[in-house]
Image (cartoon, rainbow, N blue to C red; front, side):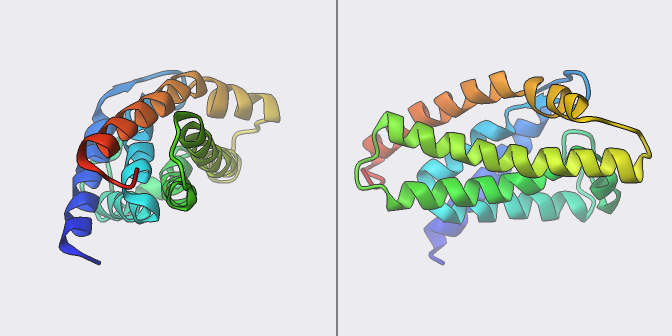
Length: 179
């Protein structure tokens, strides 16, 4: 890995941390700006973006209070931790798709971002359901999972996906990152 790549991964790790603290507490799962930075990192770094999300997760698990509600190893017992795991998969998949694109049009980048969001939400919702039922012992159904694990934050995340594409395209064009 080149020095430039390590610096960019570190930069996006910091942005994901900052994004965790810009939040709206909506019902069960807080809406944050993390998705913007996870997807933007994938638009600019390709699959290496997963390193940023992975480092973010590790730093939070070792005790730095950088998750939206703190930090520490105990955080794995929180229903929302699955979305953090989903950031890793989502940034990797989106980045991989972006790397494979010959022409990086808005629509193609948007589709890549949507696929990344699907990864984040699938992992996040599955974890949310599992921890809520198994660890917390609460009975839940698919309506509850869809309402609180998807519908509460999806509209905002779709807007963040559009922003990631717009910003990503501008940065790519301005700095000549794989056009």
